[in-house]
Image 1 (spheres, helix red, strand yellow):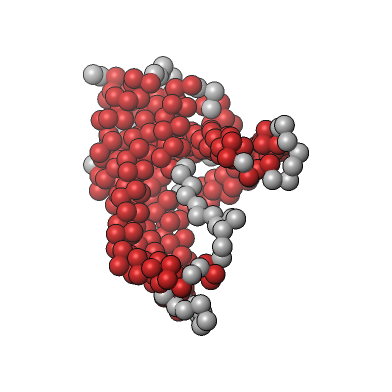
Image 2 (cartoon, rainbow, N blue to C red):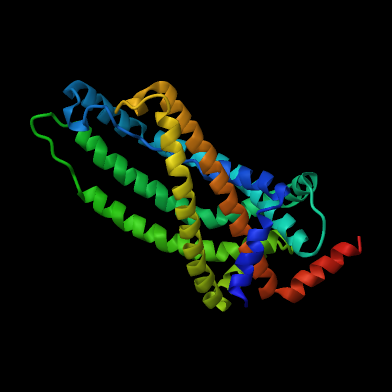
Length: 308
């Protein structure tokens, strides 16, 4: 397999505007970065005892609701990401067949295999969702006890964080395994239109049989994405700082609502563009690799489609 050839041809796919429509959809759903920042706020230990106890009670009483809300949000994002991914896989495969593609075609084809791909993704994500819920419970349990203490005798229970770290390690291993199986399973269910459980078997078989290719492509991915990230950082960071400080050289120029809003908007747009680029590039590399792993099957699917 010509590994660099996969990456070179995938860069060419980035020039196709139709793919960017669904790449942005995938990036919008999968690129959300939620952070709690306590800048310019009082440390948690300095909160008034009454407020700290109230937060502790809320965490203890609403822990299941908080976990459920996180799972629901993840599910909604998964729906958008799955539709965009189904369209990307189908359109990239058609481009490799020498066909012309359009946004309407992508929507139609994604609609046909959306539920099947969603089922595959949910089955693959189920272990990680269980691990994530357990990890969230450990963190909430640790912090709820901290908030309920008086300010004179603050201690932090690290016993729950120990299980949290263990769960994070387990999640990393499972995510690597699930990600490898998902490469083949998603393309089998979309491109070959295999049944759900058969596609999972196909993905697992490919991961075992082609483990060497997976490792090499994964390492090359890391190298390429680091290079792209550094390139974007070199270009975007100076532009962001210049835009944020235009018209003001004061040290607190970033603290104004107007400047903060512009920086946040610029960061969001930049994140979406980078996310779309990564989505298209990732889908293209693995789809072309899949076609090389199963050339006879892909050719048979193309011939069957030509008959109708």
